[in-house]
Length: 279
Image (cartoon, rainbow, N blue to C red; front, side, top):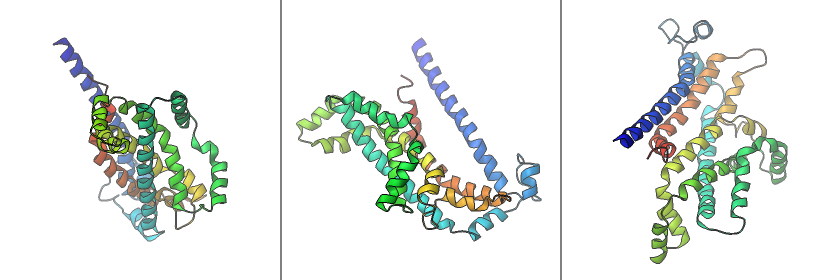
């Protein structure tokens, strides 16, 4: 009975921590949304107040939709984010499977080498990355962003997925080999379905930095045809005057796809985070 109570207590604490984190994380989003629907004076005088009939104003959204090509910006962000996540999950899962399944000389060193990307920010290599993109003719292309974000996300994917893949039953994989399945079939048909919570966790943690990034779109793809939504919203920020209604409206529109994807992966995400935390 005491063990059951302790397990229930741990489960409750984990859920409480996740709810508290969600509330703290959502509050800035809520603040951005309500201020995007108010006039300029109300934004500065009462930023915490919900829009009233007197302060309600959608001028920021009209400005965003009327200036710039935000449909293209959203399309670019969506393409870069989805393709980058797909490549991170594919190559990260394959590398994690190889490290966790096969024992070879240098296995540990290879794992440490891949984990270096977590400790060393990729932005430190911006100059070399830019030179490489210029040499290959990939500047002002979405391919350049996809390559950078894939390289940025693989270390974390390998680190997380390798731990989960070590928990997959060896008997299940050996049974597949006895039945004549190839290593690729074992990987795609047996292992990946069992680590879906971990895959969802990696997808969410990879998606948010990519969608919100300003640095690499500004350096590698600043042209009008390749701007992302985060970079496109900077047109409303000037040296002397900033159109805060338009900035908040653009940020609010940029938040919606992330929230939608988060709710899609939320169940698998929570399973991935709490897996192993409770018995």
